[in-house]
Image (cartoon, rainbow, N blue to C red):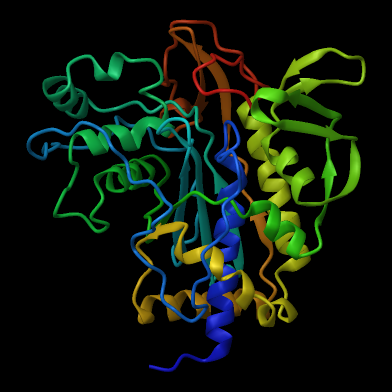
Length: 386
């Protein structure tokens, strides 16, 4: 079957957006000691549902799938509707290479009716209030699991689904960890996940440099050096044109020294805001019709780095058409800001979403005093440095 070159280019562009939305946010330390040479893939080939360089989870599993009655969460519906009814919603997730925490959870939502592309970046420390039914099922299969540090954060939700073999053999995505995370997102945010991409990428610096860098506003002095991680971030505040290495530092920064030499911890919410700021700037500067004809050489980053439900020509062409229309009609790119606050629960940093329950006087009670604002949460040390 022959596919119009415009669709092929649009597909390449869409996947590039996905890589840029996820790749730089998943490293707690350098992913590899020496960068590997990418395997060149056929730019016209369909996306593979299995990727040689993307690690599948390897955790202990329950002997049989566990059936969850009722709902996964307990009345934890976010206070606002974030996506349009006609939107196509792609879940982009990527793990910390040193553990199996989802350090990146992004929803890219495209709405032809609204004429927008929305980027919803979910902080990894979002507190998930599981239902009594789910808690009972987990306790029966894996006693004490939910009492382990951090297991009630959204970036650990997939691990629960994997252990429970959630919807194994019956779900839409045929991967329990994705099925569970997608259903949690739907219950909490009323966003139905249409497809997913699970990836690790080592091509972020190359892609940024390929496009000639990105001009972005650096909100504060960013100075952080860690020889152990081979990480050096040194950016001045103001509008800066960043190359690949500098861009990596920008999207990873969450703590460091200010102009007075004081060590400051800005937290994960601050980092997520910068990631959204960078991605929006990249798309505004490089998501152009002209660039649709220049992307065949970066399709090599796709086949070996992505596990995805987007497969089959019909589905690929549908996404290509969405991307092409978004470019042609100049959809604005919106980074959605969530209504939330930082808190500490049982000594750990969490992010509490504003929910419908909160407006009626309910909400989550914490065992420690909440910060009461949207500033940086104290780091609990569970998830590494920047």
